[in-house]
Structures are given as structure tokens and as C-alpha cells.
Image 1 (cartoon, rainbow, N blue to C red):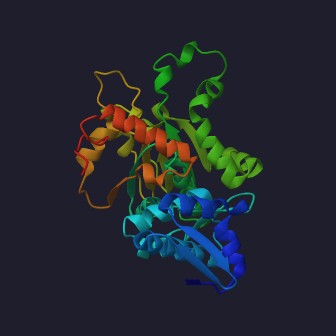
Image 2 (image 1 turned 180 degrees about the vertical axis):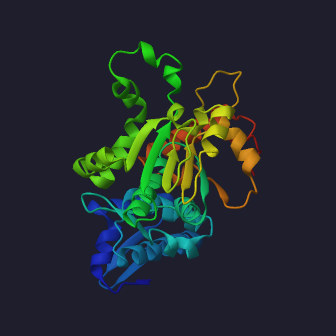
Length: 324
């Protein structure tokens, strides 16, 4: 039996048409019934124990005002099955910043929380992981929070335009229209955080800069929050050039997915090399996110796992290490 103090928390945990409840029941082969101020879980003893811990964890999140969606339920179930239910209370604790529409941005997984903490406490942070783990979005949220708190004077967002190579000059339109397709994900995140009008105001003042990586050469960037996105597509020379742009009072976040490198086969990824070279350097954090940190559609996790299994038939992970 699970005692319940507030029925609104139960309604939140159960979800629309009890869909969250069904997820727990199907995952653990248990049956959960609502008996006034108590919930009864029936099934095999071990499954009942796991389901009870999952429900209690979800109730504690609901009591803090967290939205309980399907992704949250699946992640809590995974934590409980791995014996990490004591860490559920660490989820979604701190608000990084609030969007233009008033939505609070928080880390939704332990991996994301590690990533955000690393950004807060280190000058340089490398966030490496598959699509959907929030690498770019959370980095932009941290940048906006630092800018609003006047910890930095500028936000600089950049990424390599690998697909265009050296042929940008042959594309139609002015420079902005040529590079916009490569920078669109960064624009989208900034629009979400600041709103289009505020974004445009800061852009005109020079407080925000969104530019291709090639335009960072020869500069020293002081009092800035600098984000390099899609860093797996930098060359080793570009990565070194970028890292040495760091100026006083600045912070750098580098994001990328080393399973999606678009460079020619004979070129070494600057991100892969940086992970090896910078490991253990003081004030530089390297955070490896995984499929369990994906906060998009449930199917995204399955797609990532399927590709990893296909590309590593002998049980190795994307870093070439044998999975245990």
C-alpha cells in the first residue's frame, strides 16, 4: 500500500486517461488500484517493490509541481530498475532560466543535471551525446541565464558549416542568407528563450552574435558565453583555433555527437581529439550523455539504440569500449 496525502498528485502521476499508470503496469507486469487515500500494487513481490518505488518517486516529483509526462515515467522506471531511486529527488530541481513565454527550463535527467552543473562550475565544458539529449538547448539556456545575471556581456553562438565547405561564395544571397540554414537550430533556441523582439534588439546592440566558426579566427572573446555546436564536424585545427579564442571572464560550451561526423574519412574530428587531449585538464569538464538522457519522443531512444547495436555487433559502445 502507498499512502497518498493529496489526490491531485495522484491524478498528475496517473496521467491523462491513466496512460502513465498503464506504462508502469505494462513495464513491470503489476496492477495498481486507487483506494481513497491509498494505492494498492499487486503482482510478483519484486515487481510490486519496484512499482511502489517508482510511484513514490513520481508522487514526490508531482508534489514539487513537476509535470509528469510519459518520458518522466519511463526515466523514473529506469532509475528504479537500476537501483537509483534515491536520486529521483535530484531531478528537475533547479530552474536554469525562464523562456519568453514563462516556461521554466530545467534538466530532466541526471545526465542533463551533471551537464548543467559542469557548465556552471567550469570555464570550458564539452557536452557529448546523441540527438535529443538537450546539449544545445540547455547550453543556450545557461548562456541566457548568465547574460541576464550580467555575468557576461555577450552570447556568441557558432557552428561549422561543413556541408558548404569552401563553397559559400557560390550560394545565392548575402552572407546571412548563406549561413542561416546551418545556424537555424541556434536561432530557434534563442527565439524560445528571449522572444523574437528581444533577440533582435540584443542582436543589433552586438550582445548576441550567431556566426559560422570560420568567423571566430583571429579574435579574442572576453566577457562572453560562447557555444560551439555540432563540434564533431570541426577539424583538429578548427577546434584548437576555437579553444584559443577564450578570453577573460568568458565561458565556453562545446556540444556534439561523435556518431554523426560529416567530415571526409581522412579528416580527424576536432571534437574526438579534444576529448582525448583535454581529459583531466583542470577547469575543463567532459560530460558524456547517453540514450537514457534523450528527452524527445520515446522512439528516438529506440532509434539510437538500434543504430548503436547495428554499428557495434560485438557489444561495443560508440566510444569503442565493450559494453558490460
